[in-house]
Length: 525
Image 1: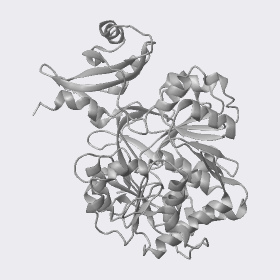
Image 2: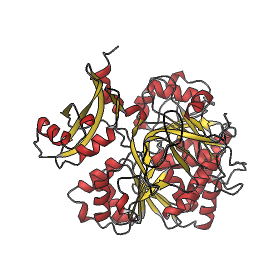
Image 3: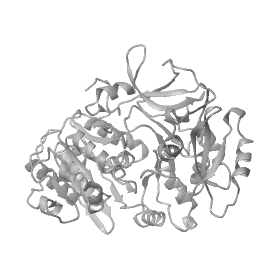
Image 4: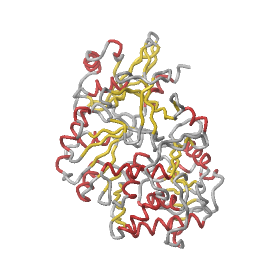
């Protein structure tokens, strides 16, 4: 693995995630650790269940740092298995339920996973490759919630396993998880995090008020880093995790009210839908202390609405699954900076570089590079891809390239412009789709919008806006185009607007621009 040499971790030797969770169970045995539907699991019981998973894995032959895959919908069992894997000294491989079967097979082979935990809902997705997996231990197919030939039911699998903590040495440098990109071509990139990085995460999130008293509602998929970065601090500090099997607005609001939730992690599209729901103001949300948002930019107007109507601090987190450093914006503390994503977090060194790799001053746009203790170990078994993400300063210090374009203002707040790959180059000029989306999103009749590059004989490529009208709005595409172009610079003007009923999104709310672009470019050769 290529040497990255990140800054020192905020973690004591031996302070693994597993050890922190075990300490929480010893300290708060009768406190609730996990809630899912009507199931409520105490810390003492949760720890015993995790131990059974870990001991069953060890009995199956799992060696330290070997990989174990999970392909499942959200459940109590998912959390138990995830933590059980790392307690056994293994490395969890949570697979995306949004990936295609061919990509999932590549992830299984690439990771060398020794077991696969599967839920009933994912059986059709796994069916095309399940008989073509090599390298699994004998009996390595575990069914979380179904019975089928060739599969061992989860409850049968753990039945004989002791509930005592296994004697496993887990070092901060040991592999903790691999999170795969959802690419559709080639072998998806496996982002490898160490135990130390995840322990550092827990300690860092104490700054967001995570503690033994936290009650965190999680509604995004458990395979996503978005979810994991809120799950681990809650468990590591002895709080209570409330897992939603699937997000729905009224269900989420009802959980916050009923459980007196203090924390949550949501993505922008969820905030957008929650705040727009006609019954939002009917729920008692006064227990909420901190709301987190990540995975995509949260628009300034939406931040203002959240500040006005949704109790508790609103904190936006900008960063990469790869780590390398991020920025955070405490919206309540900096209401005049809502168009930004905040300032670099503690321990993060961040700068903007031009296309030649030279640092640029505040106010100048370029690629964001950063380093911090949270840097991934690398792309699993892919030193070539790891090298591609690295940027080195004049002293040879390693930073990660974000692939994002932005700038700092004079106060040190970071403003995002775009993803480099989403930037539109029209007539030789760089156009940032985000700028155009913000402009269109300001219209009262626009509910959602994405701007993409489409082919142009005159300019090479040109901006096309794909918009979703608010319910009841009847504005025409021509009128909306005239309105927005009247507010944009001449070089930024949108060529056309097409209305859609909805925009395709990933399971964590990111607009799938690749899908939107494909029909316009597929016949271009």
